[in-house]
Amino acid sequence: MSVEGSQGSTGRYRPTNSNDPGWDYGQPVDENRDHVKCDFCGHVSKGGIKRLKQHLVKASYKGTMYKDVRKCDKVPQDVVDVLRSFMEGKQKITEEKQSKKDEMIRNVNVYGNDDDEVEEVMIQIPKKRKGPMDAFVAPIDVDFRPRAPNSNENKKALENIHGYIADFFYENSISFNCVRSDSYSKMMQAIVQYNDPSTFKPPSYNDLRVKILKKKKEETSNWVDNFKVHWETYGVTIMTDWWTDGKGRTLINFLVNCPKGTVFLKSIDGSAHIHDAELIYKMLKDVIEEVGEKNVIQVSLEYLCFFLSLLFCLDFIHI
Ligand SMILES: [Zn+2]
Image (cartoon, rainbow, N blue to C red):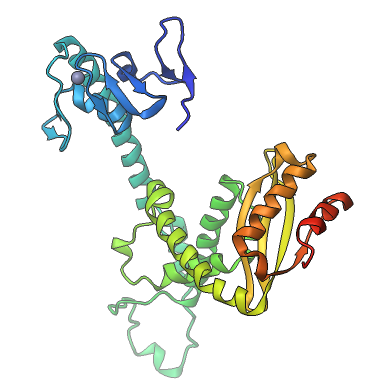
């Protein structure tokens, strides 16, 4: 992992914009910010600065024992005090943020967020035509039956739900085209099928970044492996697709097409090589070797100059 930060005038490492006092008492080992060496006892904590602080506050904090954390036996008490008060402040901020978020979520009610909306919904009861018996029968104005929301209430609720979904798109600048993707429809369908709203929990930042990503990567690579059999049977066309992302990087996608379908093989940041035909040629050559030279019957090279094709022909005459 590369280490972003500075050595400063003290010659000590500290990540950019970090005010974490932990960095005053420990330093990364071999430029790896996840491995931090304790200034006092030399122990290397392998869970970043957070783990080092747990090591320094003597493996316990506010009655919580940090499991698997080795206690520091050389740290002075004043350092422990500094770190504990920092950790306490940080924990308080996290708790406050969480409770604000919980409160915000509790306020989400698609069947009306405030009294006005509820009233508006309640008066939508169809009026009954008066008949000859109405003058003799006392009207029943209390309905004791638990009521399923009527169509007007549902219409209003759906409007509210659409508002929440739209807010998500606007707040995060997500392209509106995303709603045309299959995964968007599947996601919505999956959520509404879950029949216990009280235990529903969306994936966290960490879930998406680690656990789920790992699982999906495995699923995808298994799927691609199964597909490779078809490459040998039918032969493939390698297709390239070039585009520039928001950061101005030129990304080159490599896709492998065979009659059974198209597989996205990989994406390479080609910004540094875009004007270097030989390097681009090398990247393509690597891809062909990865797919298996004998399986490739065609290479579709969008925007590639003539002499690059020539270099190709010299090496892969049969393609
Ligand atoms: Zn130590």
